[in-house]
Length: 384
Ligand SMILES: Nc1ncnc2c1ncn2[C@@H]1O[C@H](COP(=O)(O)OP(=O)(O)O)[C@@H](O)[C@H]1O
Ligand SMILES: [Mg+2]
Image (cartoon, rainbow, N blue to C red; front, side):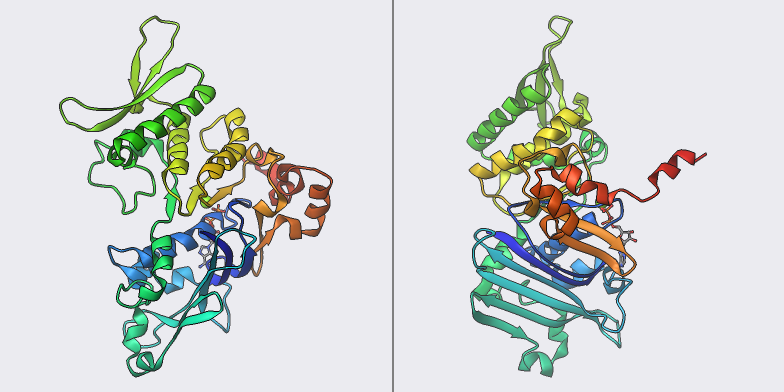
């Protein structure tokens, strides 16, 4: 399943969004245009649906409360709306529709409270809150039915789907110093500190076959790398990755992940994540620390991986090298354009001028990216 359409109202720097999403979707925009905020919508839904609990209250609290989530540009109508459609593929009719509206209590603890929660399967409405019980006891509106096992039975598929959304923004330093930072890992491990544990926990055969595929890809990206393997520290039992590098010095031998380059580590984690599951994968600027030649290969690489596993991938990026790939369809790029009333989100093919350039055969890098460059960027050169 994929998220085939997203609708937002008053979500952070977006006043209103209504876009269709493909299996591979690039979210393209200048700095601070809201790329991370857009990806965060799906982490928010995951936090609500997560089985370890927390639900709506925790998802809002961990983001600093309703007032931090609600768009500063919101005026008379301060309701926040998040709405998704799930389908088997981008061109098929949706199977599921899930929508919530969010407000803050006007009295008391000013806790987040649902203004509505709706679920449909095809044309059939399964849920339409507030229902009569909610009206009798408004406290019930502090929890979604999505987060409760005894109320989501009819649409458990949505909860399962959302709880396995994965976000990857590997910070190599955190992985390298995992030992010294032990116990300081954030929930859901957004920065990849627990990456080695994830590799360690996968069943041996799966682990072996994934590492073999990754080794093949890494050998192309890092030509000196000859072999990649998983191992455990003899004394502590801690998991490690080790690579054999060929070197001008004979017997240069094996190195562990703490000696890998930032780029190698990030690429490794990216490839592993692509092979790992079949739920939505959110990638935050995957181009970081990678050289241009490798970045140019990311789009086709994701495409090839998706042919084997139909995992939807949402990629926040402003990399020209990444978006130069001719294989990226105009529908696969969402363009974020900040303006005074909040950021606009449009599929690249719907932006008039960009469309003409795309039709003429230009890649996203040339047809769309120039629109995201700050108007007076050359003035940065005057900074003293
Ligand atoms: N509630 C809000 N209302 C309006 N703007 C917001 C809100 N929350 C954050 N922002 C703005 O969103 C921008 C950051 O967006 P972000 O997703 O980090 O950008 P990007 O990832 O594209 O660099 C900041 O300029 C911030 O001021
Ligand atoms: Mg960002």
